Image (cartoon, each protein chain N blue to C red):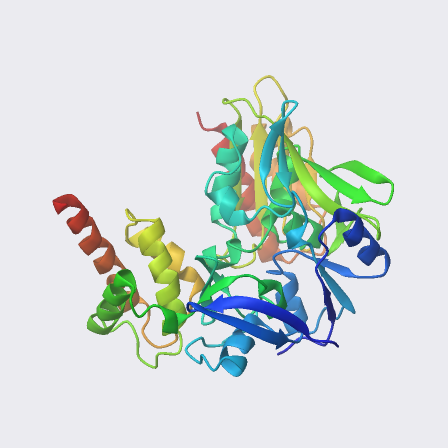
Length: 265
Length: 162
């Protein structure tokens, strides 16, 4: 199908983008998620503000012991190693499995997180990595932990007048262990269950269970999960009473695989 | 809704066009510029038939608004006439029976050319992974994979000899 009519604006400055947002515009980045929703007429905004021309929207910088990733950085750039260090290795492997390369060439990390599709990869992975969302609103920048950032299906804690400007990540030690497993019947399709585990030396491991038609479940202290993934997965999945049996089984499998990867030497 | 004036380069030719904000690049190419080699399939980024090159990399023209392509350099399947890699792929697709009805082929070729240039060491598993974003309902993919692998192998041999 073709989208319902809308107006298009291309802000060149962040202040212009915020003004457009205040007037009700829907922000757009790579439109690889929004575009299909527009074509299916599931989204019918009056105006789209194309954020791709904002200064500093894409790109990665190291500052103050943290990695700042512009919200407009594409999945393909991350796949190709734009993010340095151990976090970059982890993120490159995740990015390679997002949709397809022609989609990754335009789709952005910030657009994906702000869009908040429960099955999206960064929605699961960024909380596991301990990332912080940097939002820009009329009162300036606001730092929001990505744990708790997504509150529902296509819902986040971003206020109506705020834009997602960047993602900030801690620099991970080289010994950081990582597990990530998602279930897709076909390469590139939406995940039916995603699990991630990050184990930093000397700290309790953190796990995330996502893509279950709900906001991601973050397990801040995943020691019990690491010790007995089968029993602990069953206990955690009791918190998802609406899941069908096969989704429960796949989610439990995702947790077991992610734990096994993060436990391997 | 008022139209947007954009300038873009398509297959080496500068174009100045007025587009509706909701107009997808695929529809501008086909309906506006009469470049009907770009095919529209699923219109939500899954089937890959509409894949074209935008600023040197493959992208979906069915979920890229034409209005967002101001200043962009676009290359469609019609724009690869003098490209040696594409010539080798075309020949390999024909030889390996990598197409039947041909609807997916323009998108397949644009995606395959990117695989050949970006991943010169790709093996069969990697080619299958990378080509998973282009659906073919005729061939069953064996011929497509063979065609891409044969171009990769030929290029590796040339590199080894060179």
